[in-house]
Image 1 (cartoon, one colour):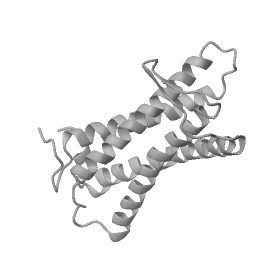
Image 2 (cartoon, rainbow, N blue to C red):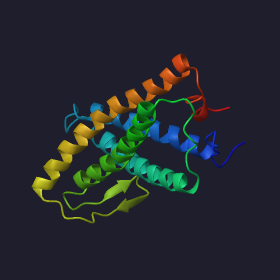
Image 3 (tube, rainbow, N blue to C red):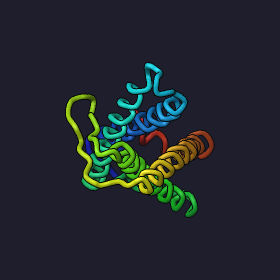
Image 4 (cartoon, helix red, strand yellow):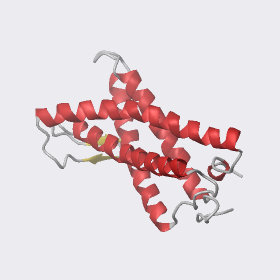
Length: 181
């Protein structure tokens, strides 16, 4: 079992981080989409909001650990034979996805703490507000959070589509390097 990444493959922790963060992000986008149609009196309103905040903080924490892990053991080398635009596009896509993994939870944090109240993380402990958020910043954070979340859906679809293109059309090991086995 490979732990650290090599020049050719991702190690197990990198794969676990990748798929865990991906599942959390997709789940959070779905939960956010579900929540916006709930009324204040709906029995799921408070629970869905609580889970969305808690899972969002968890996604941020995992993304930060993933980032640290990537500094410790960098991603495998680019596969030989890729076109320049594919290499540049892949690097750009990864940078943008990293931005989303960091910016979306930060804007969610600003929204959640804008009333000066802490975030209850799964009722285990509180994450206090550390920034005073006025109404203008709160509205900006809501707008940015919303649009970045939906943009992430398109980016993830493009990311997955590129991986499938490499697997099915190019028949290279791009996707296999991030799968189990």
